[in-house]
Figure 1 (tube, one colour):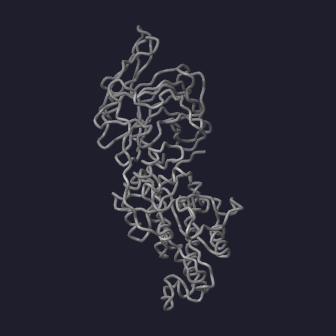
Figure 2 (tube, one colour):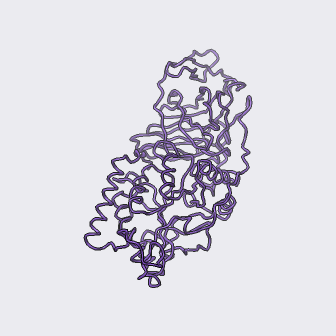
Figure 3 (tube, helix red, strand yellow):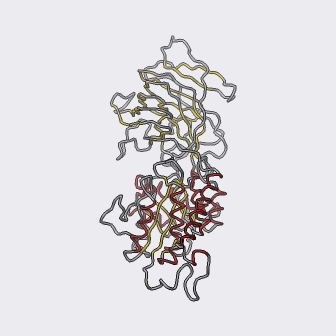
Amino acid sequence: MIRSRRNPGTRSHVRGAWIAVSAVLALAALTGSIPAQAAGDSPPAGAPAGTDAAVQGAAPATVVSLTFDDGNADQREAVAVMNELGLKGTFFITTGFIDNPGWFTKSDLRALTDAGHEIGGHTVTHADLTTLTRAEATRQVCDGRSTLAAWGFPTESFAYPFAEANAETEKIVKDCGFTSARGLGALKTRFGCPDCAVAEKIRPADPYLTRALGKVDLAWTLSDLKSAVTEAETHHGGWVQFTFHHVCADGCDLLSVDPGVFAQFAAWLAPRAASHNTTVKTVADVVGGPVRPVVSPDATVAPAPGPGVNGVADHELEQVGADGRPRCWSVDAFGTNEWTYDTVTAAHSGRAAGRLTMTGRRTGAVRLLPTFDLGECAPTIVPGRRYSLRAWYTSTARTQFDVFLRDAVGGWRYWTSSPFQPASAEFTRAVWKTAAIPPGATGISFGLILGADGTLVVDDYALYDSVGAPSLTDPTGNVVLVSVFVPAALGTIVLIVFAAPRAGKVRGGRAGLPRGRSGRH
């Protein structure tokens, strides 16, 4: 089930995290569970920083890395806790998400590095690298790193989106200048990998696929977090990487940890440097090595379509990939609902069409779109130009085009939606001419949506530069009649198109536009 994102944590939530940490520390001090070292005393002469001379040589070294994926804004909750305790973490950033609602801003990233935390790479759009061509995967990894460097954040560490990696992606990450890359789920916990080790080696055998615990989700308790550390401490030490996504109360996301639980865990963890020779370090501090130069990949992508050229890759939806979906297409959903995607042979043309089915809808919609990428699949566009968007469909509910634009750093944002098109039991062509593409946009993705329980079948997508676009006639020779009007709110021409006999009557009318949408894609 796809669930709506909640709003990022507010300042009051962060203040609550500080209060929680202070309460935990105060209780520990009263009970004597925090040694003098944790209270801020200097270590004995000759002892390494963060250790106690009494345990040197007696306890094996255990290193814990607290890592955070994607750049979710609610991770500020954890940052406040860690800053209070003097703990440093590694934040793997998906650069295309930054400065979008619900995600970190560049100012947040600056605050992280100013506090001593590490910024790492996590691609531009959170793409599964193993499903991409080498050229697109290289763009995802190298462009993400070069963007972070341009923002003032040189990076050494990388984390694979979805923890998907192979020999080729490891080489790409290395060639893009990273010194390490993290996987997931290759260490033993009660949730899986029963025959695995409990910790990675502090000097990993394969720095480009380091072993880590499975991602922390709602099933993890405070006891589970502590156990992952103590298991390593009692089995000759090593390196334990935790991976957090959301830090929020009330189970706002399946991949979340409660701020209070995180605060208790961090307060328990902080003094173990003195008592158990267990230190908290960033990934870069564990792996070591200098920051390597930024690498710029081959930026060659398909140009914007010329007059009369369809810019949509696999416009007939028939180049099926390993996941059963068209090669250059992705299903994107938002809200609370259940959906499926499959193909049907009752197509408008060719062998197959794509079908979306929705059930149990409470909110939101689902759509099939050209993949949000860096140029392999999503059409390239030119600012200032207008484009004709076209698709054939049958639907049990009204539908409309949702349109997204790619910016100069590869991030994708919702732009606009067309007027609604009526439900239709027979294949009908939807056509809409966009407004002028705004400055800075480099790519476009669009698709018809299903926003009610039922089915939507789509086929034969097209995108044309409006100058030189093919005439609006259907394959049988019928003229496609156009109703033209100018919504006052937009000040732009909207086309409502119907396939009709040559003697047919023009139909059309004013249609309301939905509210804009944004989020993770």
